[in-house]
Image (cartoon, rainbow, N blue to C red; front, side, top):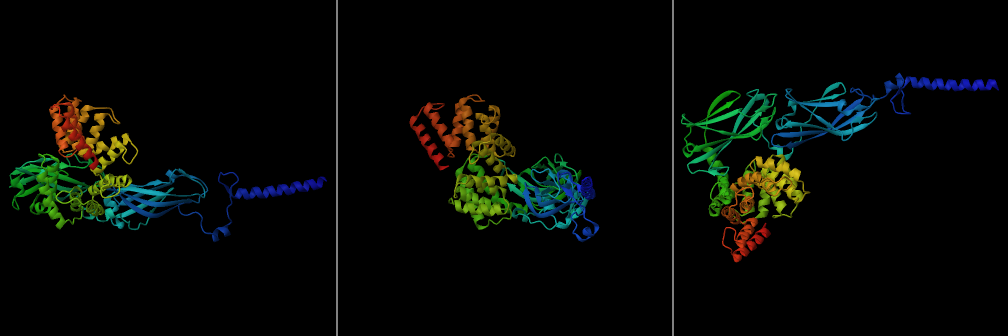
Length: 566
């Protein structure tokens, strides 16, 4: 019996010894009950390698996409797949990184996104995205100018790239700069179109005109450059008269490789715009150096006069910087319509958009909302941000199309991504009123000041009304007065009506019935329902005018009719 027990114990010990020996040759990954067995040399020679050069992590790039991000940037995104053949887990943020180089001189770090996962375990596969935010000059570059470095754990290698498929809005983008022919390692500037304007920003003067000169700037340096005092321009006439240009920048600074569209504005006597060839010169100070070149306005006058006439007509229609005159406005609109109907081909889509606006408003022609929509869509296809906003307005108000707040918001957001102030203002209004979207005063107060800062009068009006009535913000009559006054001066009738309320009730200003009457009348003459209603209130109660119940009812009825037509 003892001998049988001894024999059984020896057998058990032999089995345990064999098992422990096998485990000693393997590796334990920390997961209970899971053992990784190491194959023998013959098996390893015949099997496909399970672990690649990336020390067990294999990163694979898939399809790429490019999306325009504002006026100057683009997002390049890759689908990525990460497989862990290793015997341990890794923190994703530490395991992989990527850098995209342009001309081997400008690095752009990539950002991986694997969702909520922060760790990749043994034999786990993760799908995600790799995104780069780059200046458009990088996204538009020849693929040979780009190099993508991927780092997996401690190994770095170069991934071969294939040409990107650009979105339609970027396919026609032509940047005026090339790295191979750059003229500076700092800022480089190239002039664009010049326009002669009868008025500018609501100002007009019979003896003077405005010359607006567009120009592009690229930053070839590796540092962010502040625009302040970086560029100056002086327009000279007959070698002895100088006119300093006011430089308008869309932003305060320019990033490396960023291309920014800017404008210089010259306020000059009429004689300067009529100068013969050779009489004008342009001095440009850039990077601490000054250059001078001949300046010829001969072609710019004929090419842009049509759009200038439209702007002048718009000013007369809204009383912006001039006394309001509908007849004068319609006369100008008819001339513009005649020319644009004959020739509205424009690679930037502006002439198509303006013609669409004439059809939409019935300016200079019969109103035709279907034709307006078609023209807006043509301009949108050419990347015109204002056309995106105009088309969004049709869907927002249900003009010529079925009302669709969702579609309107999509168009406004697309235009906002291009930096369009009108679209930013419209979105701010939607968030403030809850039209087609949940009310979000905080978001409205983020958007409206941005558009107002860019000079959009509708944004000024809506923001001013929020301060006037304390909607989503602490009531502030001083701020409301400032915003509504500026918007009213630019012809916004709702601003006139609400500014009139401030003078009627003495809110933040000394009570002034005459000023209230003046503002209400100006708004009512343009069919503003609030202005008409407020005039009715004046006559019904005799505020600053003789009581007249019949006239009050006339204004109330006109207000209801105008409200129904909106």
